[in-house]
Image (cartoon, rainbow over all chains, first blue to last red; front, side, top):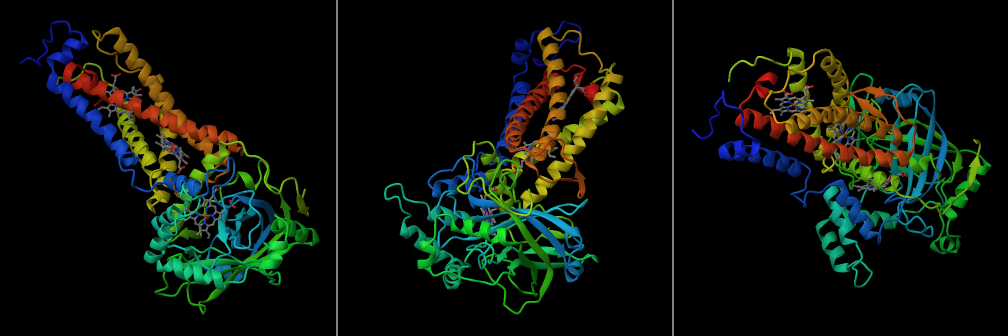
Length: 370
Length: 175
Ligand code: HEM
Ligand code: HEM
Ligand code: HEM
């Protein structure tokens, strides 16, 4: 047989060996090619339609007219905050997370406007957000990123992506194609309903009197192991005020931030953390609101007593990953937080490697700390 | 195939095949998790960190074992270039088995992210919070992972070459 090797003769050189063993050489080539192919397949390189986090960030950047180097690809205009959180007894009963233990938990975080342009004028339509990092001593931290909206406009990552694509400006006109958005809305009644809720809501006058919602469903795990599907809100204790569109238009470009600095200079601002418990059959879909009569549990109180501009090492350099959860809080079958975790990771990676110019509100601070 | 005259010790073989499975799994889990936004993402990332740290522990044991139990000699008639290639690639594999988990741990430290493994063990940061350092390490993690995959392919090709074509004692020495 040509493939046989005479064990007593000196081994021929490699080229000769390969030539004498074509079937074996081919087998090796096939095994190597198949392994490399499997790797490429799992990595999504041969299935470009499979939605990965990079696709989301690419699409969001395109829709925003290009990336703003160094800034978050969403919620770009923001300011850092600090304070504390104290858990309440009813909260301890439904989640064993250390943050609810009752000790004073140091908190850092960020207020932002959801738009991708870090230098946009504070708009009258903007979604406002609160991001927090609760770091109890000697126990795992809890990160959250929450919005002042009545739910989300979609319930699945795919629909979020399709919406971004439909709202991308047409290069010819510089404006989104209304036909594409119409087509999207025709397929997404939940988005139509969300937009109606957004139109009906009264906008808070500032960050300090606004209420922020987890929007997504999470599981609270009680000390006895009972899991409950919840959504939570940071409800402003500050009296609610609203501005007319004309009043807002007359305000300066950074009024949301200026007003926050001014408010914190006068003293701490507080929020109540309230969990809403789902009842059997409540949809765990971010675009759908739960009936208003659901049980509410007060989990604790947040105090913000310090505000400062974004800078190296503070909230600017944090990824408020909604899946950075301590034992006692777990993801549910709401698919959105998983996609958020993957997408924030890509946005964080990209901005971390870029030189960041100063934020719109730079070198300012207010409140107790140094 | 005859019984090899020289064989890796049982511990060496156990470590080699356990780690081969783990490292290969890590490459596929890693490349797979960054390509999806599905609910699998969170579970894969969490398993990725745990297996990664396990590999770091095992490779340290393996290095000590290798220094204590040197591998059997390569076939005497192996061309010099291939001897060099084999030795160099084995050391490259060792370096990468150390570097990838260390870079993974270090990059999450520099990112200021919590590092949770084995379902609840919190690892301390091994670098201060610095996102510029994170950005460099995050890219290094990708580049080193691709280099590890390429080296693995060459290693697999070489092992099959010894087994199917040279039919020498190299593969039997490891099984
Ligand atoms: C699939 C759906 C979503 C996608 C793709 C998405 C995408 C993003 C991206 C790319 C960022 C920038 C992250 C960074 O660079 O650190 C971001 C920030 C943020 N997102 Fe989302 N988001 C989604 C859903 C939501 C939902 C449902 C909420 C609210 C409950 C939310 C609240 C926030 C907040 C508060 C921030 C800013 C956090 C900070 O200040 O660092 N997002 N989002
Ligand atoms: C990612 C997976 C793998 C890694 C990281 C790896 C690593 C190594 C290393 C570092 C050595 C040197 C000996 C030692 O110190 O342990 C070695 C030897 C060896 N490996 Fe692997 N290996 C992998 C997969 C495989 C596979 C899939 C095969 C076979 C199909 C294989 C076959 C061999 C053989 C035959 C040797 C002995 C070489 C000699 O005699 O010096 N390895 N491997
Ligand atoms: C032998 C060990 C390891 C191998 C072969 C490996 C391989 C990979 C690969 C192939 C990727 C995807 C490619 C990329 O995006 O860079 C990846 C990503 C990643 N790895 Fe590893 N890794 C290892 C150890 C670790 C360890 C120990 C950690 C952390 C403790 C870690 C954390 C990560 C993270 C956080 C990502 C990116 C996830 C994301 O951004 O969505 N890796 N790794």
